[in-house]
Amino acid sequence: MSEGNRDLGERMPYLVQRMRGFGTTIFAEMSALAVATGSINLGQGFPDTDGPPEVVEAAIAAIRAGDNQYPPGIGIASLRAAVAEHQARFWGLDYDADSEILVTAGATEAIATTLLALLEPGDEAVTFEPYYDSYAACIALAGAQRRVVTLRPPEYAFSLDQLRAAITPKTKLVLLNSPHNPTGKVFTRDELTAIASLCVEHDLLAVTDEVYEHLVYDGEHVPIATLPGMRERTVTISSAGKTFSMTGWKTGWACAPAPLIEAVRTVKQFMTYVHGAPFQHAAAAGLRLPDEYFAGLAADLAAKRDLLASGLADAGFTVYPPSGTYFVTADIRAFGETDGLAFCRSLPERCGVVAVPTVVFYDDVDAGAPLVRFTFCKRREVLEEAVVRLKSLGR
Ligand SMILES: Cc1ncc(COP(=O)(O)O)c(C=O)c1O
Image 1 (cartoon, rainbow, N blue to C red):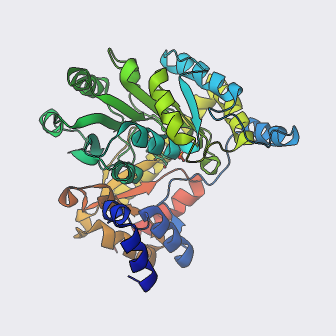
Image 2 (cartoon, protein in one colour):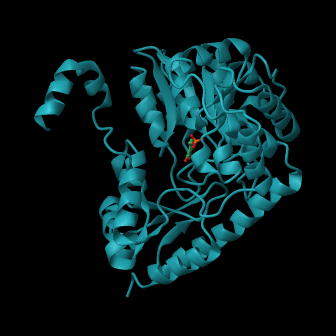
């Protein structure tokens, strides 16, 4: 630690203590490695083509029309209305656009502000591992503790007994992500019903990250807020990034009963306050696209999933085919290796491809050690070239 850092640590012992272990995110490390080595980056999940032209044009039109100043704190009316329409149209959920929807700077801010608003120091939050990395960081920022339930391949199923055991008198909420990053799992209706029953039984809140809600290839997406007793206790989070292939636009939203949205908004106003007025107009246009757009996106990505999953299997990996998201996970033990982190750090040198070790998303290091994640949200020719390179691994 440098002299400067030590001073900072002494001045902010509480924060440093809570955030110990949260260094640079794995995505930053692996994307930098991809650039430095000129490798194909199947590490970070961002598409290499732009989203629908209607959405691009809506952003440009908003800028030209002068929608360039601070938007309202809760988000522009048109986007809040579009989110409400979307929740009703796809999931049969009814939200009031003025009091039950909050626009945020990506799902990331919705997650952070929700956890900061709902968790007190000493509270516990139950989540599933592997978990999206911001969950652990934001639970820690709130001064709360995480309790994790492990999803285990090949189905990435979880033990209901482990979930029951994770719930204690200190548990405030369950933090869920379906479709799930990094595993690509889509939680089944039965699994969600079991989770919902425990939320109702123990009077817990649910925070559900559904950014991949339209990227489902097998099975169905079931928003947990649709299950009995859940709407009134659930904060549902999503964003435009994945649905419209514009991950850099960072426009997200949260839907929840008014008192919960009020609490989240109170925190949000001191984080970003507001953001990205033109992109809010664009996201509103996107959410109103016809059904064919959403079905076409899923069909395109399903074909890419098949391409990469079969290519990885041919290359010698044990593949756990995903039902949704941008990601496929694979086990490296068939190569005689067990350390996914070392494997991913050496992969660019060995074959010019970057992947992400999923062990960094686990508390149970042994459960995650041999697993690595590849993204398939890239052009076909990029995936085909990556497969050719990966096939050279076993040689
Ligand atoms: C599970 C999950 N939640 C949230 C996010 C972040 O969403 P946004 O870019 O809208 O902040 C991501 C992005 O990769 C994600 O995979």
